[in-house]
Length: 114
Length: 115
Picture 1 (cartoon, rainbow over the protein chains, first blue to last red):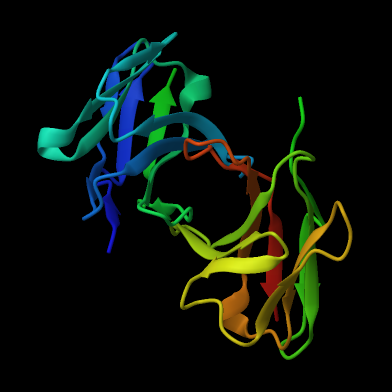
Picture 2: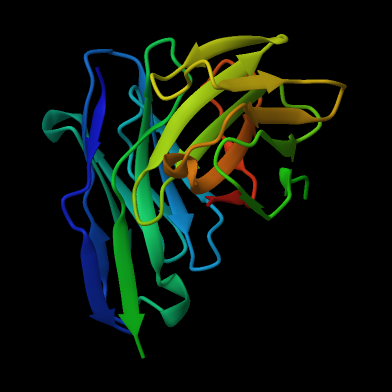
């Protein structure tokens, strides 16, 4: 069985603050893939990043960075210098073993205030 | 940039009616998926499709659901006899087949309202 927990239901920050969104996953498989998706108010799901279980290297893309730690089964997402346009629901997702289906967390609603 | 498209964007139907939701995946992708998201809740997997057959399905995907790839471009989800609890946003997604687990690209969704 696989499970993704996003304990933060809602986060509100003021523009230019840094914010970290937490994601904790559970799987018995040694091979798995982790993803983050963004869902803006318009409703579509936008792919942000994919990580596989053999690559614990952290990644930075502009204002976005991801911290993958197998020891704590976490794949956290940090937005630096947040902007109003970052306001959205962010979903962490897991695909493990031979199954390609994504198991999503319940999402974190991020609101960035001007 | 290639994208997944879905039609219609919004479908209203009466309980007990059949609906067909349509998707055009990215052209060189070979894996196709349907997910649903009940308002305010998480995104849930329904079914995946590869090589003209279902490869995985969830417990949600019962006998009232079916999928089809009627031609080389469309991928459809049929709900035979809709129930009120089928009201949700339905997302189609597609992915490639490289050795790594490719990211799934999602369409804009079809909002299904069952009255």
